Image (tube, rainbow, N blue to C red; front, side):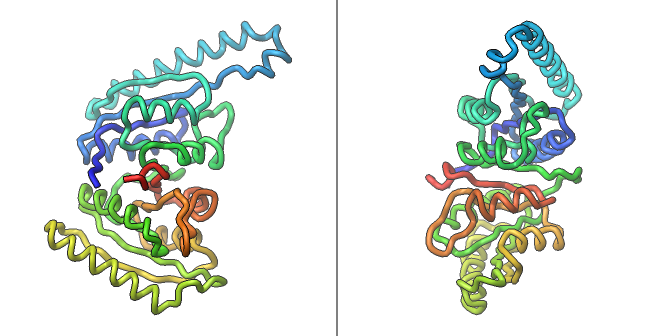
Length: 294
């Protein structure tokens, strides 16, 4: 799989969370030699508002025009201050945040979208479950969801949850590429849900050892210096196990897919992945369905 990060799309609403996302976009840009495109999405005036309050239209349009000019000025000032970074473009769009971000990602050929979990519109106060989920469902590229907490960005330890689906080889390949770029160590994690023993402990451990052995061979073949470990734990559910393990063990990134698997798989958007993104203080590198088509 040929994947490299050269074009990063950073989505911002000028919040502290968006600033955290930019800090991670910087780390990825500097490590991978990538350029950053910034995008801010302004809300459109809804047709229902036009019908209900036509007398306020002129004032509303004036406010949006003022907001757009302020956004452009803020972004241009930020770009000038970030002299060590290469910004390709500064975009301001009007309309649906999900639609505009996806359109920009396709148009700019983004290899990675970096954003906060909250969303893209401070006015609409969008939470995980709307803009963030919409981007994850339709993104043509991986999406890095930054933490709400202000962290010192570093990628030294990457956690890769697994339930042994065949499609998870794609996750492991992306994780391998990231580990190679950042010289980070990988850990494969399987969570045994306390009320769901689909995979016996001895089978889970054997399968993880097999995956680890294959990665070790690749490590030797490609002469990489990072470590590959494995772990099997029990927790109330997969999401809780992943988040608790990542945070207690000091991981810097969780790599997980959003596309729905079959068979034993339970890591799909709307379930484990969504809960991991919502709960985790560790940034999440999420792989949308489009990434599984390689």
